[in-house]
Image 1 (cartoon, rainbow, N blue to C red):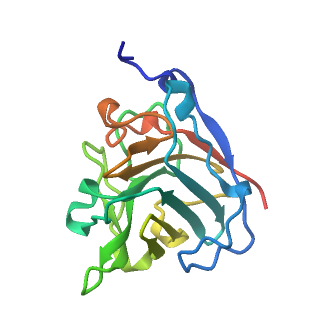
Image 2 (image 1 turned 45 degrees about the horizontal axis):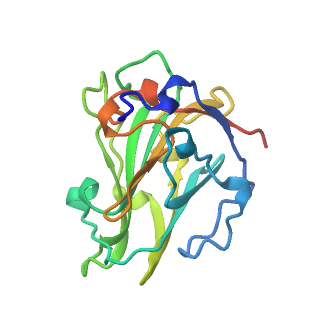
Length: 219
């Protein structure tokens, strides 16, 4: 029997986001990440298993993310022009955590991170932003090059990490607004999708009220 409404959708999900005095050094190998920064996984509530791990942390300079996927048998397929069609990690943020809003405001953004597909030879990691559909107002545009990213690719998987600088986060103000909306979806051509709340069928890419709340831990 197919569950029409995921169990995770029935909860208001909230969790802390760890503060880190110095953001990690980016080399794609994840040596600077520990379990302290792992984002919670709630797939089990819907009878699913995770295929990857996702980490995150913050400080006054911005947000940092990392992910790792193992057990792959196929080569990665990533294209910044079609970032949604291959292997990717997407992050959505709402710097005002307006959970009552069904449409994005200027404080809401979507970022995509790709382990490969960038550069002149299409073999470098790539990052960028995408407008949120049906938004009341879009966040100011930023240069993709401002997002720092690194990856390490192996035959059986990859690891990737990125820093989104504070200046790229519309409305980032941790002193006045320490509760923010934060959503991620990890997509893999072999494994499918891994997300913390809902998938495509319930319009996470349109409706910021479906994103979890994270509380920025104090320094």
